[in-house]
Image (tube, rainbow, N blue to C red; front, side):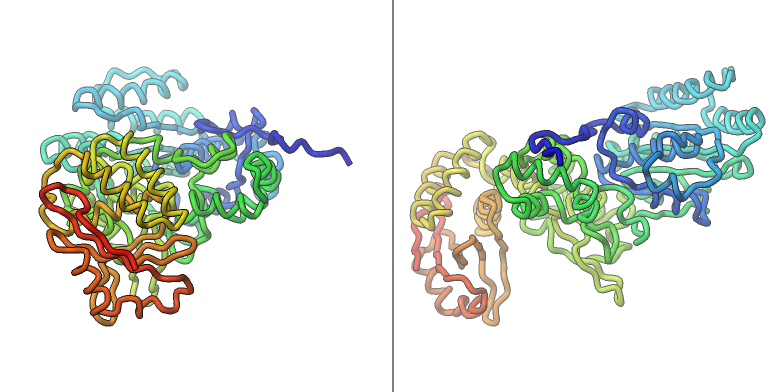
Length: 524
């Protein structure tokens, strides 16, 4: 048997490629979703909406649907669709990409919609001077139906892109929302001429109030049968990327099992319903296979500035971003009228479903994986620690080195020196600020950390777990490390963690409010 090349995959990885035809003709890896697509296109509803976070494969899914409805049988050779579909009926497809309609004023958005229509009109030899996009869309659908004698398929990718940046603006949102509602309004009136309508986006369609007339649309975002329609499941990675896993492990110099565990810890953990298969972020996973190393690919591909501002607006502490319970109605709530940041965090992919009590309809939402957690904490560094993120990152590496060695004393000395050089920032005159600051720093060390952990006799300020040790941390402000240690002993906090299986270390820390750094500490 010919020895397999263990340094290069047999297929290319489609980083940034969202066109099904290009992937299939270019020897790129394609995770076969066509069995799910077949079920979707043969289900009872012909009007479908799907919500997923950015870079989760929504555009590729839309492109695959386009190829399928155009009857491109050649592109599906070897895929599940080839054995499932027997008719391969060709339909005319109107494909609208709204992803470039961002950061636009009223007039710009109107021109953008007209340009989208003009491109398709030219393909069918249609000429129209009407300035009204809804009239032109209506005429386009009817004309294409008459010209081809077939029902029309309408695919709208990133339908909400023009509205995302203004979703909380009282002035601009209603104006742009009306434009988009006007554009989409013909979809219901043209029902006799339509075979299938599919829309993707980040926010749920009901949240933007632009489909009030289209009351027959089915939201499949949380339906179990479509849980894996985007993203890469653990099973898909193990089977369709079997050879790739061996190659990646060799490049990383570790066993296949270790490689899988590292990938899982960094990029797995998404669930869009419950129960659900474990779903990996496809953008990060594929980038890891390309580069042969683990990094923050998804988080680094988009600035979270808007998210950070919303965290500040709603007063959400870093330690409270995850670990919350909510009903589906609460995290599916309209972002225009949301009373908490939970809907935005969920829809954007910063928290996901981790568990559920289906009898009572309660879901537990938490940060999906290490990549998202580390990315969030890095983004919060300037607000809780220092704007000098370069120095902070270097310091955190040194802190991690000390902690891995079990040198808590050395780590706290490094932290004291670092914080004494950090410029003063506002709102540091309460104990909670230092608790959150340490939560961010300890999280960036890659350790498990939790705050306000309940025990039979009170709440522990902070619990941190490394591979070898459990640290019970109590904080004081302008008091003494001895007072912090006395509280640990008085409340007998270690009793709560006696069964954890790790040796326990008690740490009492006292902060100096004037100097904004550690004043003294005790370790036992």
